[in-house]
Amino acid sequence: MHATRTVLQEAYAGTRPLADAEVTIAVESLLAALEAGTLRAAERDDEGAWRANAWVKEGILVAFRAGRVVDQSAGDAFRFFDKHNLPPRRLQLEDGVRVVPGGTSVRRGAHLGRGVIVMPPAYVNVGAYVDEGTMIDSHALVGSCAQVGRGVHISAAAQVGGVLEPPGARPVVLEDEVLVGGNCGVYEGVVVRRRAVLGAGVVLTASTPVYDLVHERILRPVAGAGLEIPESAVIVAGSRAIPGRFAQEHGLSIYTPILIKYRDAATDARTALESALR
Image 1: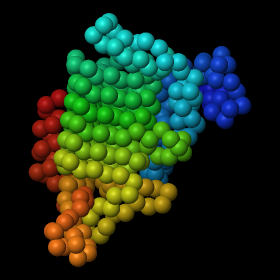
Image 2: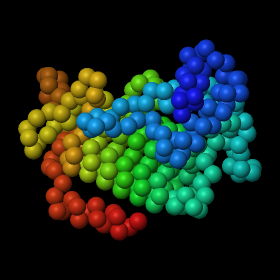
Image 3: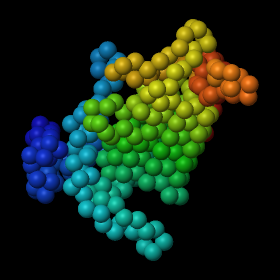
Image 4: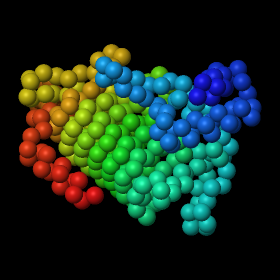
C-alpha cells in the first residue's frame, strides 16, 4: 500500500490533482482494503492504546473531494444522490453477513466481518470496521471510521459516532463483547474497553466525566488519550446536583454517567440471552 499511501497523501496536501488517474486508482485500492479488513482507520498498539491511521482518514477525505454527486436511485420509490465513488456496498452471500430487509445501508469502504447481523434500518459509514459476530440493531449508526470489535451488541437507536476530521483524531472504539444499550450515544473518540456494558440512554463524549462508585473516583478524559471506559465496567445514566443557590432552589440536576459495578454472573446471563437471540 506504499504507493497508494503516497498518492493519497499528495492529493490530500494539494500537490497532486484530484482528477489524476492515479488518485482514482488509489481511492479504489484504499476502499477495497478497508472493506477486506486488511487496512483500518485505527489500530491498537502493543500497549493497548488506540491510534488513528491518519493517512487512511486523509485518503477517505480525498475520496469525498474527488467524488461527483450522481443519481444512485433504485427506481422511483428510492431516490437518493451521493458521491459516485462512495456508493452503498454490494454485499454478496459469500461475505457471510446477514442484512435483514428494510432500509439498511452499508457504505463502500466499510468492513463487516463474518457473522455480523444488521437489522433494519441501520447505517454503517465509510471507514468503519465491524468485527465478526457483532449485532447492529434497528435505527443504529456506526459512524465513519468507528472501530467495533467481535461479539458486540449495538442496540436499537444507538449512535456510534464517526470521527473523520481531523485525520489524526482517534475514532470511537468499542472493543470485543461490549454491550451498548438502546438510545446510547458514544462520540468524539471515546474508547469502551472489552466486555463493558452501557445501559440504555448512556451518552459518552470526549468531555464527559464518569463517576465510578466502585472505586470512588472520577474517570475524566486524559489529554491526548480522551475518555476510556474500563474493561467489564457497567455504566448507567444518572444525574448529579448542580451547585449554586438558584439550582438548589429549583432542585436542578445534570445528566452524568455512573459506573455502578463491574460485570458479574447476572450481567453475563443477560448478555448470553442477547447472544441466543442472534
